[in-house]
Length: 256
Length: 99
Image (cartoon, rainbow over all chains, first blue to last red; front, side, top):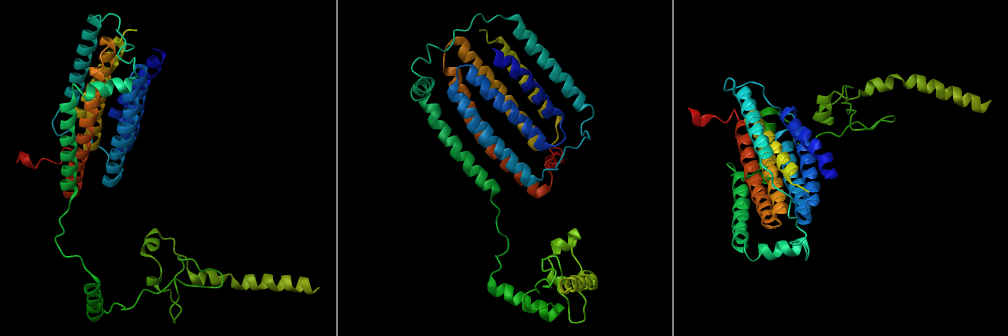
């Protein structure tokens, strides 16, 4: 029972947090807290098999699926606070409080007596006992879940499938497109120029220099240009005299 | 050991999930609240299995987990499809059938 009194407040606070956090990722992490605590409660309730399944299936598979979809949709897809139906949020909270009160008061009215406990049922091991029931009395339901799972898998594939509307461009089409671009817009036919290679710096963020001394914009990645982290080659050459002077001084010292 | 506290906790979690479904606007968070409600009912099932000394409740919780897994797969695929066409995961934006 100690486990319960430690975990119950944590679970309630985490569940309430799902209602109030702005970001969906935080809600997923709070849900993970609730689910792992639930798994521990299952273990406390003599259900070791469900303890493992809860962690593997719920926390491991379902929650990770949630996180996958969150990453695909974009983590900053936060909630809008605009109410489409006026007063809906307030009504929902009032209705929720009423439901909670009715449930809790109703449960407080009844006394369930002492629990029978699962010591007899789990005598030969919880998993063996579960398997005995699952493959005898519930075998039809078990077989039906296979149909359900296959339907779900096929449904997810159908929903995720995207029909290609245009044929995929292959190498001949790409080459023809390049030549067409050259004819119409004068785009360079060959590959893009490589970034600059200099004595003092040869990283990909330094543009190559054209024959007239100006930097070639095509020689650095557009991503780096958008981030504004491109170095200028002439600027680096500015310090060259100072470097030469210090080197000269060094050499003189050595000769002395 | 009485199982009443477990049932009360399950009721509280169920209520929180219910309010979440009604108030949140992000479809994924709404879905998480549905999962919270399923988990709460699972807790009640497992607690009652212990109360009655019968493993049927645990089997029921097991089946709820299987159905929840299938439901999440299809539901998230639907959310992804809606997001791809409407660029939004808000439940308010998918309102074309209204008009």
